[in-house]
Amino acid sequence: MTESVVLSVEELEKRLTLMSSQLPAAMLVAMRGAVAYAVRYAVLRQLSGQKLRRRTGTLQRDVEHSPSEAPPRIESASSVVGTIGTSLGYGKAHEQGFHELVAVRSHRRRRLGRILAVDIRTRAASRRARITKAQKALERSATIFVSGHAMRMNIQARWYLRDSAKAANPELRDGALRSLEFLARTGRLPKLSDIQAAGGARA
Image (tube, rainbow, N blue to C red; front, side, top):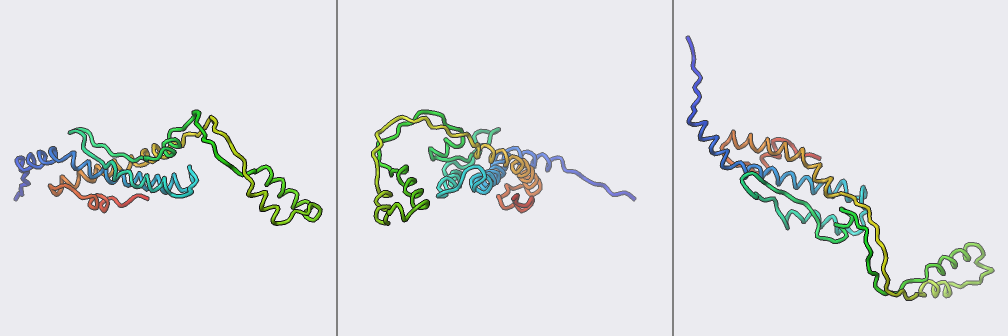
């Protein structure tokens, strides 16, 4: 007694034709997952004190928002593009480095030298100096005028965006494979939740 296993070539051809036509869209789903990972990596592992000291969180929020400004897209039948970035000038300077002359506008600043002198005197011999609190407040409030001038600014390249994009490459590769597997198995395009559930979210 024998049993036969039948493979429908016609059905297989239909499935392969479907996969070929929907391949860019399937890769776009994987790219969305990779971009989301790159953004998390940049915010949590690059901009939380590791490469740049966090002050206001403005740069972090701008990087988080960048995929909304330029979402992943299909550029051609063989090209799917995803980006993360920043629209902030100082964010670009810290990413690529900056070594140029900049113009400093005229402004007023405190007399830092006199403040330090008062602090030293008060620590060493506050009674002999006879400097009252009112006098110290006056010293601290004293300002000087600084005229406009040119200054060379040197900022080291941090590559926080480039390194985050590189870190997302394994996520993109695994997501692409899971997306293809889902498309081949079900005959329909996956959602991002489908391929994330299949592979688990990376830290």
